[in-house]
Length: 218
Image (cartoon, rainbow, N blue to C red; front, side, top):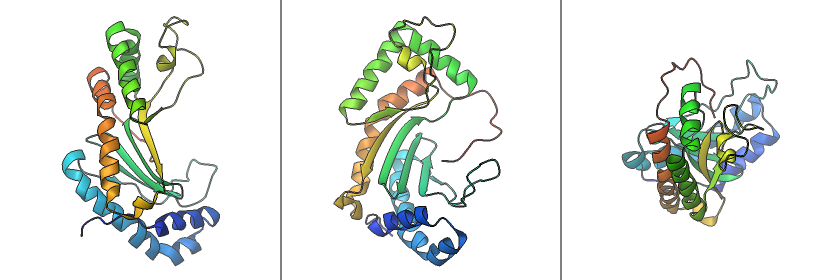
């Protein structure tokens, strides 16, 4: 089936789940999740696939083994396109899209910081971020409270040196067009605007050489 939009019923489902995150609620409303959340996102992912790659749907169930929060269900549905490093999410807040490096292993982080500290790649990243912000994207990522050791505390790009991850985001919210096929065009536009940042990261950071044992899910 072709993608026709995301119903506000999907947002209402997550708003209700936030209020009653229980197995009884989930069981009673599983059909709403399947029909109003999962199905349209699968259709959207299929249409985005030719440009952005295969989609991975994150499980709706939380891993509570090592968490103090024992609520069993995630209050959003995340979809990750690993080949292009893009992410899509629907929650009570509406539609969200992002792209970039969501976490970096130690070897990646070392390469990232060296590139930021050097003049040419560092200035290039600054320019890429300016372009992203001009396209109404927001640059996010985990940050250290202090500049890492080995770098001057007055470095002109100290805010970038403090980052442990970096990605561009766009909060679409819940506009009227969310219920229409226009969603695809809006996501594609935002994701294409994220490409210069992803290109910089691929060139200067690249893949990790450290085997991944376990990664948390969004």
